[in-house]
Length: 181
Image (cartoon, rainbow, N blue to C red; front, side):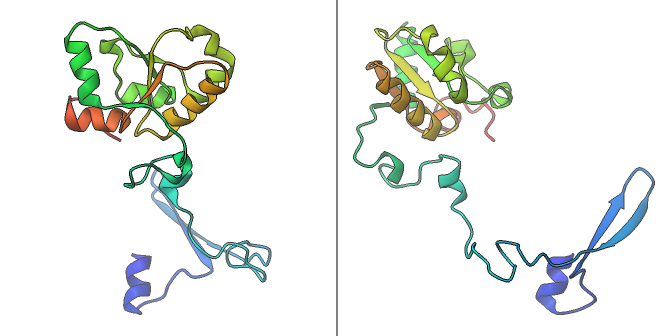
């Protein structure tokens, strides 16, 4: 409602105030907010002048053939349809999901033999992976699994494939029953 009031230029806005609503007691409170002169956005000497690229910050590749982060690097990939074909032909590749446990709970490829190994745990648990075995890594859309591949390469793993588009592509192209988030 505040955005509409600001856009339409009508009514009293909550500028400099914060309205709190407690649904348990059905009560409202209003707090007055003081301007912070050291705020990096609106302070006396702002250092932040534009919004961040949220997708880049989260490691989500853009629509270019390769994200800037992967430029100049050869990250071997496998598409979700290629992986599905291999699974349908009885192959059982090692599939590693590098997302967080709460993401795994939303949807995963466990029924196809995938296992969870969050990106942050790889340094401590990479000994659980056989460096001589082909490993297909995936995440939500491909950014974190590419980081995992870089790390594992630095530690002697060479038979690594990044699942292009990650679990989102799997949901879009192979199995729509896998939830997207």
